[in-house]
Image (cartoon, rainbow, N blue to C red):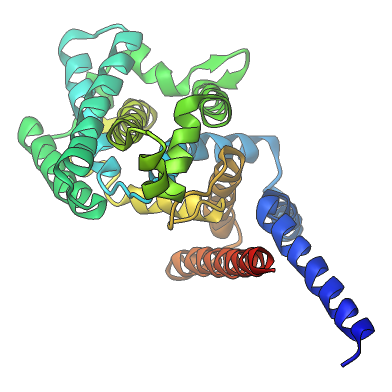
Length: 342
């Protein structure tokens, strides 16, 4: 083999390496393109899909999932997982609904109460994981059942319905600010805040460091226990907030509220490019992942797809996203390793 041939092959490998590296770094652009194509196809099949009313409903229905996905992103980046968020939503929603039905409290105070309940639950998760050393999946699975059991206990298996809630509480989710639904406004604020935290603060960089290489993070002096408490406390706080928003939106608090919803949130993160192996994920990607999942949940019924197929189609798309992300990351890592050897 001639030197010229070797040089050509080397240039081809470098070009391929750069392509995969750019794709992995800016995969959000591919996700945007996919969302646009999907919307065009759906609109061609049902002209009401891109109507103002349907878009507004779709974004509103995606807002709570988007809020939770930001917190789950932080958890997944640290190589963790939180299976208890559905139960935290149910617990905080039930307690806040009971407070409103008994005392008709100020909506702002109710929101703060929900966040405090969630933070306490999240810090409990963080303590078991960081201090005791229990695996995240075990700790959060156990607490999921505990939180759900507490919810059933304090409610005695009964619901809190809309007629027991104050009008001010119901307007938390149904009201508008400058013509924009409150749920959307709250989600936008949270995304702006967490975009800043993740990209421009020390704790944000420490979260990525712990997820990328825990041993190196420990050697560099990063307090991993503090980071994990922050991550799970934040996830809990967002779940507590979502509990209030959920009950206000659906005007009902039940013992099984948001049961299994944590899996939907994790799916949104994975679609958005968050690595379950830790160390990788962007706020913009999570937003797009939640949006894509919201589009699918809204569009499939409009296209008269059988309910039996809807979950399967969503699962297939999620699986495709995971496989694509894994293959590209593997290619990038292999090329980086070869470059270091050279």
